[in-house]
Amino acid sequence: MFTQKDIKLLEQPYFQVMRTTESFYEIQSKNTKHCWIIRKPAKSGKMAVQLHHKHTIKTAYYHDHAYAFNVEHAIRLIKEHDAYVLHPENYTYANAKKCHASAQ
Image 1: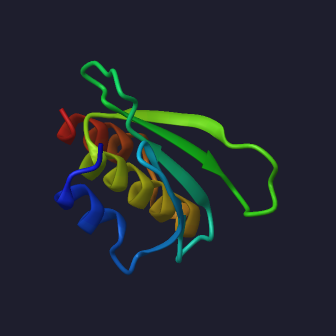
Image 2: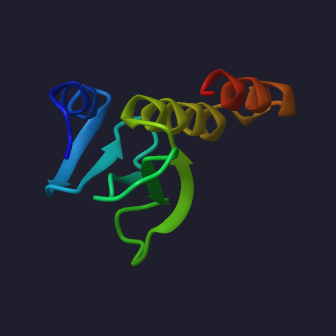
């Protein structure tokens, strides 16, 4: 389900890979320690990737966070989220709007 390009993006030093299966990667941001599942369902539409999130490794459950067009878009959303968590003073509605518009 994941292409070689997807795998290369997911296994970059920015992330700690926690678990992989045929349909998802569970990763942790080394910057914020937030955990993510990037899932590619067998049948998918325009938004082919599901993104699930939790704040700590000890949190019992992930919550639905977003949908992405592809793995590259999902990683961009994670990095934008990290930027917000690390530097909320720099976050504005205009920046968020620009990020989501660039994905389309």
